Image (cartoon, rainbow, N blue to C red; front, side, top):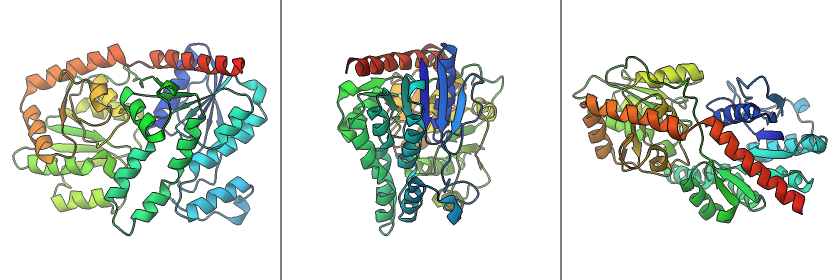
Length: 411
């Protein structure tokens, strides 16, 4: 099958989207399919040699080290460029829409080269143009962005709330587009229920295919660093619950010599950095970002506990990577986290979201229980091997592709 895989941004560990694109495309290639990734900036890294990459350049207005830059007039070459610029200048987030429109233009010229188009989390209006051309379209929705919006608006100061609402304006577009795509993929039954509720789509449109993990790369280490806790946050936002973990760590350090490895791109002088300073834990909190997969795997395997204090997760790739690493998990009883790690206590300890007292108590209990840490770690490793593999993800995804092709053929 000839597959066009669309992703409006794809750098590894860029909100998990890059991980999904890289591993799914490789799994599809392993099954003998012809895969071409169409991606906006930041572009994917480490694609399988059998997978082609077509870059879909934009104005790249959020790039490092100059986010929200002002482009040169000579860069504005099309109406889509102008739309991207004006949306950014009016506090909106244009990438899902403008990427989809650019991809639709590219695919209009190559209609006969593909059997199916698979969109990753974009849900831009350009997908309707692609579908209207007769190409079967499948879209992955990792979780409804509406959940992020509610939490971010609630956490914003009163004068910023209108700006946050404007930023999330693309969520309404995603709702409308989702209604018009008969085959939607998502990564957990929890996420499927939330998408059906928030987007108003039919449950029959949704197909649950969990994410996978490279169990050869993410594996247990011979030795771990005593009292090291690791947390991975794809974004420095309230949704990830990092503030609650920091408060718990501040309490635990009174009686323990511990450290927190925080894998996240923190906003300079932002709320997380300020809280670390206010709590007086700058000496034991070490933040890092832009890690390679190998570096992340080594760090995960070195920790005694992986903490996922999120207020909501549609899946949680870090949880699966931690399980594969044999690293015991303490996670919030929120979103799909119980579904991913299991509710029977064999692989993880679950705590009430945003409950700092409970989080502090459970982390302390585990740090004082080497036997329990070993039990949870071993069970987590086995769960990763038994349940989460990219080969299975690719095969289940192809089955949805076939359903989309058959539907279009029957029309």
